[in-house]
Amino acid sequence: MVIPRVVVAAPSSGAGKTTVAVGLMAALRGAGHVVGGFKVGPDYIDPGFHAVATGRPGRNLDPMLSGEERVAPLFAHGAQGADIAVIEGVMGLYDGALGTEGFSSTAHVAKLLQAPVVLVVDASAAGRSVGAVVQGFVAFDTEVRIVGVILNKVGSDRHEAEVRAGVAPTGVPVLGVLRRDTRLTVPSRHLGLVPADEQREQAEKAVEAAAELVRAGVDLEAFVAAARAASDLETSTWDPAAEVTPAEEGRPVVAVAGGPVFSFHYTETTELLTAAGAEVVRFDPLHDPLPEATAALYLGGGFPELHAEALSANEKLRQQVATEIAAGLPVIAECAGLLYLCRELDGHPMTGVLPATARMTGSLTLGYRTAIAATTTAFFDEGRRVRGHEFHRTAVELDGEVDPAWYLPGGVEGIARPRVHASYLHLHWTASPDVPARLVAAARVHAGLEK
Image (cartoon, rainbow, N blue to C red; front, side, top):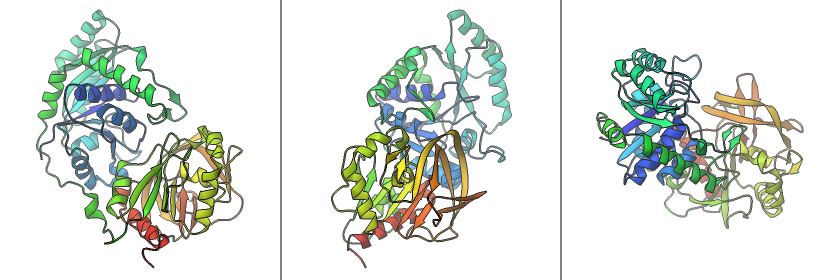
């Protein structure tokens, strides 16, 4: 399989690889290319900007969450119909899960995809020394093929000349030089960027500013040539229809929360639900009621703590959700969904489905987790082991004893009921395709399509 592709990486976080990657995606699209956008790791904010830049769904590639054997097939699936793919890295090029010698790092994914790497280097506080940085990254792992450098945050022509002189002895070509640009500042949030779905107009302006910067400073033809020099990728293509078996008749409605509050779920989530036989209907809990004939509910991630008052104001939906779940509506809730099912969030009434109160805290909970299902539900059997990811600044206080959803190192987490599974843990369902299949099966029972 020949898919022109480049991984956009950096020596460390903060070098500007998101700006460069998004700008490249938008500039290439503007030049007539069909661009596939990907993000290494579990982050769900950057793929939202990728979607704005490419006009296609943003996708994640994460060996920790989906398994390294699925990375290339998932890439091939997401790149279908594209003539070039841009894969944005995470953290520094060689930074992976702690204590794993780089597992799930950008370099790990680049090797799994046999993809060349373009290194984005922040040159704002260095001159010739940038050459030493580039040489060090080239030599660190010779299986990683660094084919170009983009110099970011360059201050002047004289500064550019000095940095270029430092890089020249490495033999790595400079594909672009970007000057500092204040228009690229996008809204900040306690967890990073504001998701593109929350401030669409602002996101589009930031993407276009990045594209203009790239068009002015990057040799797009050289970048495309580097992508086209990627070797053939021998891989199968991941197919959601091959992961699940749909029923022959009837498609129960699975309502999927969206809008500014529930802006996060992996693209493959709804693809798997559809393949399993669901009619996926999106709705915005800020304004909408439950979709007609809802037979199951998926509440993904986002920032409900920033919209608690507005969420609470949709009293009709809150009552609907509570009534339907009490009547047996199956539901999987991850992170933001967990908060919405609590009695209240920062003093604002939520659905009251779970005997718990949620609040903002001053500490960040972040990282991969290996979890074991603590309670059997319609979706997980007790003892089931999964890998997930946590990313939040909120805490949930229980009113009393509950059946926990997960055993985690150091304790238990979440709340489980026979047809309700709510926790902070985000899963990439490609590693557990039976979970969406079981959600759809429960929806069929609830809709009366099966006993």
